[in-house]
Every structure is written in C-alpha cells, then in structure tokens.
Length: 310
Image (tube, rainbow, N blue to C red; front, top):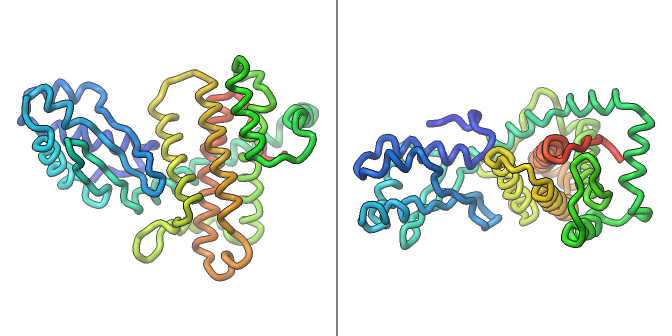
C-alpha cells in the first residue's frame, strides 16, 4: 500500500495507483503507451464526499475496440487488490470509474497539512518585518472597507471587481482582492492562538480527526464543503504549473468564502468544547489546514505576505 505521506495532493495519490495498475495490467497493447501520458482524472463535484472520476476505460476502449465496461471492471479488480483501505471503487456506465477516498486516508492527509502549515515561518517573518511597513499594509487592506463589512461581502465585491477590471500583478493587488483572503488567514491564526490558550491544542497530541468508527468527525455541510475545497485547491497547487494570478485569486477567494461559511455554521467553543472536545479539536484542525493552504496561496502564488493579524 502506498503511503499517504508521500503525496501532498490527493490527486497525486490516486494517480499513482493508476500508474501501478497500468504497469502490471498488460493485457491491452496500448497500456504501456498510455501509462506515459496524463491519465484522465478529475475530482467529483459532490462536496459530501471526496471522490475522483476517470474515463480511462472509455479511452482504452477506443484503442482496443473492447467494451468500456469490461475494461473498467478489469482495472477496478486490479485497483481493489492494491488499494485496500485507500478508496472504494464504483463503476458507472458506460465505463466511468469512481474512487471515493477512505476517511483514514483523508485524516492522514489533513494531519500532514496541519504539521506542514509553516507557522514558524509566518511568525518569524511577522516579527521581523518593519512595523511601519505592516501598518501601511493594514491601512491598504482596510482602505476600501472603512466599515466592518463581512468576509462574504468583501469576497463578493472582489469577485465583481475581478470581472470588471484588469487583474493586478501579485506585487500590487487591488485591496478588494487582498482583503478577504488576508482576513480569512488572519482569522485562522487568531482561532489557533485561542485554541492554544484554551488548552485544546497541545504540542504533544495529534488532531482526533476520526471517531471510533474510523469516520471523520465532520458531518455539517459547511465542514464537508470546506474539506472538499481544501482537497481541490491543494490538487491545483501541486498539479498545476499555472502562473495566472487571476486563477489563484479566484481559488483563494473561494476558499475564503467557504471558511466564512464554516466559521459561521460550526461551533468550536462553548457547549461543543465542553461536551464534544474531539469535535471541537477536529474543527480547529480544519482551521489549521485552511490556514496552511491560504498561506501558500498568498505567499507563493500571489506574492503577498500572509499576516498573522489585522
């Protein structure tokens, strides 16, 4: 079984299993040629589950003049042998293969995001940056938001602006593009600090992502949507070489909006913390994972310092 820790993006993990399957599945003459190409693979749109869809069998069917369902069943059989506990497999006519990720795999992936979120790097940069520069940045962030508008309103204004004007360079983004992303990142950081003060987050313990049934603690639609979007964005970060700042701004804004929904709908403190501390900590883990991805988008794709607070 391939280790989840070897892969940053879930799509890379799924793709690797197909490569292994194709390398041992030599019945069809075109397999070796196809294995050297990009396997068609896309993430499903159902936010209640993380699954991928491939039309590999349909593609092979055109080469070999063999029914796609027959090829799909053969591929699924080989995948099942090598991917026990990684994902469940479903064949959908006329030959689509659906792969749903197992919850323990997603838990391991989330833990990697949390552990690699680079908080020390952000803190070091935040502490050593010039105070006047930081004050100037905050002024720019709030220059077009004199009232405390919600993150959702700011994001909507930013989306409208991106359609009505030329996109700025990463070095000089428009405030309306910058604010909701920076705000969401800063909110994540403040929630993590509060979790540390409240004793929910400790340096010794891992996040309890799973319940006794080995299922993720996430059931609310806003939790599931945020998780699904995190998977999608990391797939893009790792599997796309695009330098289009408009694309990355759109992804960052979408993630920021879904984080806003999550923070509005899913309680961490109060009764949840007292009665269900595992759920509270799992939700804080989702906050940390979001902070990790937002920081990467801001600093590596948009060329913007991911500030700790606003």
